[in-house]
Amino acid sequence: MKSPLLKENISTSQNLSTIDIFEKAARKAGQTLIDDFGEIENSQVQSKDVGDFVTTSDIKTEKILLEILQDSYPNATYITEESDEIKGDKEIIVIDPIDGTTNFIHGIPFVGIVIGRVFEGEITDGIIFNPILNELYWATKGGGAWCNDKKLHVSNRDNMSNCIIGTSVPHANRGYKNYLNEIDSVAKNCAGLRSTGSAAIDLSLVASGKTDAFWQRNLNLWDICSGVLIVNEAGGKVTQPNGKEWTVNSSDILASNLFVHEQIVEKL
Ligand code: 2AM
Ligand code: CA
Image (cartoon, rainbow, N blue to C red; front, top):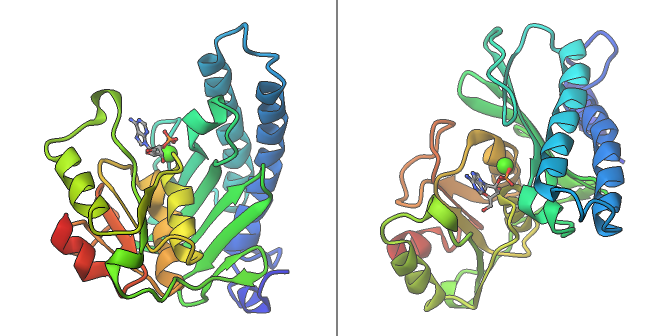
């Protein structure tokens, strides 16, 4: 089970750690996603608009998360994908009810409920919970990164040419100047590109040492806040793609195993 270390991070009178509370909320909301995912897999919604069905799923999930989290953090500020900001105190809870929405619509199980805590610009706690695969990625600042009860470490590959690198090919109106050049430049110098369709899951793969790096532009804080902490706590490095410091206001990201970071910055 989870590290007993976490029990030192007491945040409520019920002696639950922040991660315990995030996990409780994500598991409850995750049940709704499991049910809805099953329905999509069984094609029972194919005759309706699946997009609308999933939007309802997103909103339902966020409502459950907010109910549980606001019970423990009634005064916090909430930044979420589906609602307007709920203004509160300096403690910020960031929520993405389904990262990988398009995967969800297509019955691809690469999805994550993302919940992070930010205090004075620093991400202190974060989880990415994939209810379909029952994988809970989590980290607390200074406490390491974990998947369920397994400690995570980034890979130790130090030559970009041996690396598998995650990214997302921008679609529809998400393209930006130079994106094809970027992809070309990295692809020519690595062992392969991968794209899961969820920035949160892409970051969990870097933290697990399965891929060696990930970059993407034009993301929101709720897509990546937990993943940034989890990669850092697994021994990795996170900056903007140009190598400059990543802050909670950055929408572009490069996360890596540390060893190949500069090699990739040179190609972006
Ligand atoms: P989402 O699934 O919550 O929409 C896919 O490339 C990644 O980019 C996902 O993490 C996706 O989050 C995120 N993303 C952020 N903004 C997006 C947008 N406008 N369109 C598609 N994906 C977006
Ligand atoms: Ca998202």
